[in-house]
Structure formats: C-alpha cells, structure tokens
Length: 328
Image: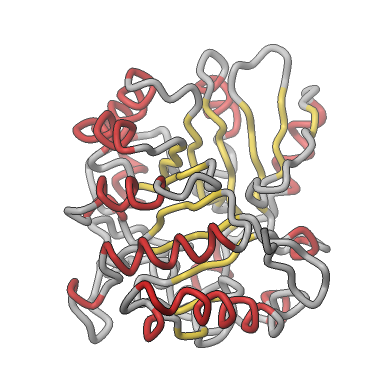
C-alpha cells in the first residue's frame, strides 16, 4: 500500500474530515456570535457519496484513522450513513467523532451500531453555570448524560476536550482529576489557539499547557508513548486513576515535528494544516468512481507543499477565522 509522506519524511495515518460547519453552540473561543452561513447552505457540504469516495482514496493511501468533525457533525441527518460508509474501508481501524454532546444521550447507541469506534466530547467546565456561559447553551446535564450513555453503549473510553483558558478553567485541575479518577475518561486540555476572529480573546485568556504538566508531574503522573495514528496529545497516566490527562500544546517547540494528520473541509478542500492557506480543491474529482487515481495523485502532490511548521508564533493564523471552519 502507498503511504502518504511529505517532503520532511512525516507519514500521515490520520484524516480529520469535516462534514458540516454548522454548530448549535456558541462557544466563546469558536463561534461567540453563533453560526453564520459562510455564503453557502447545507446542500453545499460533501454528500454521502463524495464522503465515501474521499475516505476510500485516503484509505488506499494508508490512512488508519478518520475523525468526523464540524461544526457539530451529528447535526447531519445522514450521520450514521456517513459512519457506515467510512467503515466500508477495512484498512481504517478507527472511526471517531468530535461532538459537543448535544445528541449523545439520544443517539450514541445508533452511532456505535453504525461502526463508530471512538468519541471525543467537548466539556470546558464541570460547573454548569460556567458551561452555560462558555457554550451559550444550558445543556451541561444533557452532555453529562450523553457521556454516561456512551459507556452504556459499550465504549470503553471516552475522550473529553477542554479548551484551557486563563481565569476560566485553568485552576480547575483538581475538580477534573476528581471527576476522572473512577472513570476511564481521557481529559484533554487544549491550549487556546489564536484565530482570525479571536485575537482579543487569545491575548486575554491564553495560558500554556505547561502549567498543567508541571502540576501533573509533581503529583506522580507519567507521560505515555504515542502510537503512529494518535493525535497530538501528550498523554499522562497515574496508577491511582482510571482516567488519563492529555495536553495539546501547539505553541510548544517541535509540536509540528510529529504531525501525522491531514484535514478535508466540509466543502471538499484538502487542508495541510489547521492554520494553512486556502486548501487544495478535491471536489471536482469526487463526482464519480472513475477519478480515484487522479484524486490520489492530487492528494499526494499537494502534500509535497506542506510546510515544516505552522506560523502561530508569529501571529499568522492563515485562513482560519474560527475553528468550525475546517473542523478544529
């Protein structure tokens, strides 16, 4: 099998596939004013057949893991069909979703039946009032019930994403640790990243994940090795805890050296970096099954233009106006 490799000898096993940029939450760090159509409607997003073709192309190029992102991917009515279409590729071992948890309690058993193997849920605070303030939705108990439902449906582990923000949740480590002690939850603190729309918020609330790492190491947590299709988190375990802590720190030196993931937007563009430029159009090659070879060649050719690193340190956020744009 061919393997996607860039000019810096990095190998790519992981595709983040956005299937919509619509979201029903209004998170302060992403869509504080709510979702606004960006000159397109729902019919503009990749169709089920287009998703089937693009996932097949990536599977044939060595992709082992596909994460469905958005916006909120579960807002797609054909979400279960999308999961099943990706599972048609036997070389893709992991099909994951990142969700705000809004429909988790109602639908997670159906997602698992369709072939979903992993779940990430966004929970930035364990205080229901602060959760409401961050997300614009008073849905904390609903999301918590969804996490319970995921375990009941047979998921052995659930990942929970929390965007780390100064004066919001950076002093909540002990509360999060108490929550994951008896539960197989991998809680992942994600450093707040600067986006085109979010520079003021970034300056006010950014704090390094290194602050959390120092506390964890002092309490006996140990860094775990990464496997080749894992995301960018530094994962820590402790013998007294069922749960784990992950740290995603894009401002840390050499963060990009282990990059193993590519992104396709809901409009069908290949993005080589979350903070890259306009993207490489793939959609004209997704109309039928006859263009799979040309599609593979365009993906491989485009990958040769991938930069060695992002330019976040210089304040260059590329085209990423907000994180719903190409799925975070």
